[in-house]
Amino acid sequence: MNIKRCNWVNLNNPLYVKYHDEEWGKENHNDKKLYELLILESFQAGLSWECILNKRESFNKAYDNFDINKIINYGQDKINELINNKDIIRNKLKINASINNSKIFKNIQKEYGSFNNYIWSFTNNKVIYEDYNVTSNELSDIISNDLQKRGMKFVGTIIIYSYLQAIGIINSHSKDCYLYKS
Image 1 (spheres, rainbow, N blue to C red):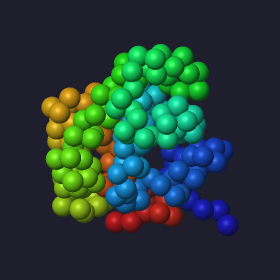
Image 2: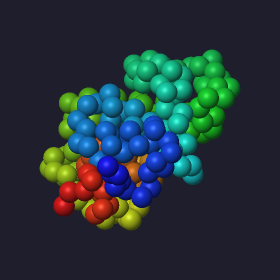
Image 3: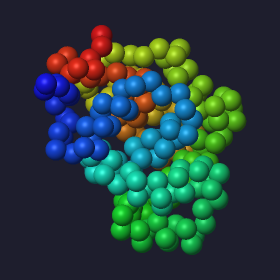
Image 4: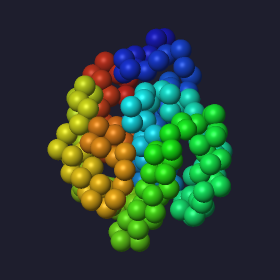
């Protein structure tokens, strides 16, 4: 049987197929996963998600399994190690932003009780079903602006829209995809 998926999925990449089938567009309320995906999405700026996905396991190793308590304390030695790690995106601005964004993520957790409470509050815990051809919307504009006001970097509206899709706040599987819901 030939399963129809969203047309952006590279069917020749098992990681991409698995991501589409098991993760993308599914409601996520786990702060650790919300954190990991936000960090990974911030590295996507200017690149394809497939590129980031292919390096996800290397990011996981390089970033201490996305242990936020370790990452917020990264010093220059660790930054240099990351900059020299050929298995991840070695952009110094993005690496520095990932540490800075981690501290802000932690502050949001303290303010709201969890990042989940914060991010899902924008939709009153409701999923938005939307056309997958859109790259931003009013919601991504609002969240992006709020995160930037808090000091986060590499969280523009397109990155945040992609993040909202990844964590299931926005479900935008195409109409011919077997995971489509309206």
